[in-house]
Length: 365
Image 1 (cartoon, helix red, strand yellow):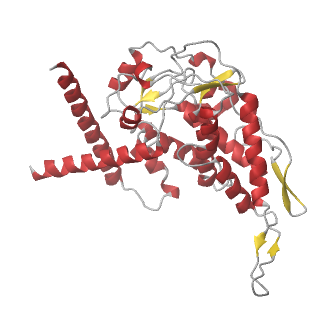
Image 2 (cartoon, rainbow, N blue to C red):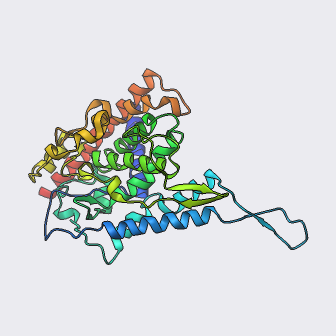
Image 3 (cartoon, rainbow, N blue to C red):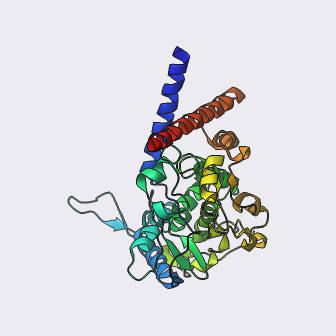
């Protein structure tokens, strides 16, 4: 009896932790299946301009003189900052990679001259999700808008993923010096837990594509490693000239955005069969045949969903991915611990199912 009580308390604590975390990060979903209204105008010029302005401001911030220890009382001479890499990345992340909701994502959501399509939760393919199944989505009702970039429609949330999670990939890979694997694992982990499956119920491959392309962007800031997608040397956005950082070329979203950012082509997975069934009851059309398979090569196995909507498989469960991330985490997971985490996740799902069924029963009483 006591063991059952302790197990229930543990499950509740895990759920409350996930709920708090998901509401804190404001994990959003986007509905690109429900299409209403005319074709959106291309937002590429406005978005390019916003990013290039942020890059210029970041370079200026990184070049600001540093204070020196005073040589005379009340006087604080300053010295040139020089080309400090850490200062440049800090300035750029300050202007572009804000946690929770990124600056360019906010800009795309609010700019008066950008056309958007927003599908409210109660009209979306996620309208039948219940709060125990999808707490952050149902309780916050936060749905990202859809915009057009070039010839591709994407969710505004992808802009935040590109810069913020892309920068997390960049850090996880030691500025790509260790290759992209730990970045990919970080993305799969975050998507299986707090940005997706455990909070909204949705595991988004399009999010992972935006993250990966964000890694490509951050690498190209100084271009000290080959492009992880092509393996080729690339020209940097920023170079050091006489002890000062200078912008050497302009940014364009067309270098990164493609059909794989579109969730109606690169379709999502769902945590349970019930969630999948609730979405499929609205007959979404997944155009997986339009995915850019050749562009992503072997990475496509991790970033592209060629089979359409399905249930999240075993190899993408949180404890499985966590075990693979052990080279960069501070503790070692034994087989027993991994099995314990799996058991907790399964018990949490049973609790969610019970609570969801109770909600349904209450509605029909």
